[in-house]
Length: 115
Image 1 (cartoon, rainbow, N blue to C red):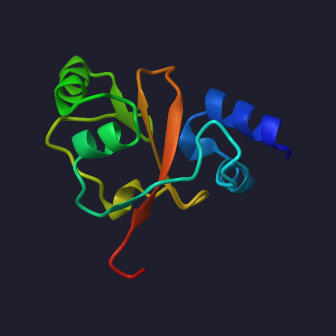
Image 2: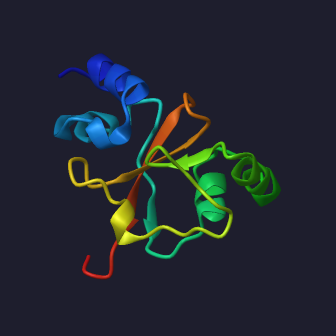
């Protein structure tokens, strides 16, 4: 899979269905995603969404949560949600956040206590 195919796959599929080699292609730093950021278990979805650049402020992120548009691994987030080990997608060893059902997907790494 080349970089263009990886980006197309990432844009069109649910992150749970991404092939394992997609993350490798997206993680090289030369893609629209840049280098993948890493967050600790327990990080707030609001903080993560702002740090990833999806929103400019927690207020914007909170509004998106209330409207049901902020998604973590394609599932709607609540403003009090936090990142957990259960959010790490096994195929890609990362999690994915997006704004809106068809919005740009932002993969990120989750630092577990065992790392």
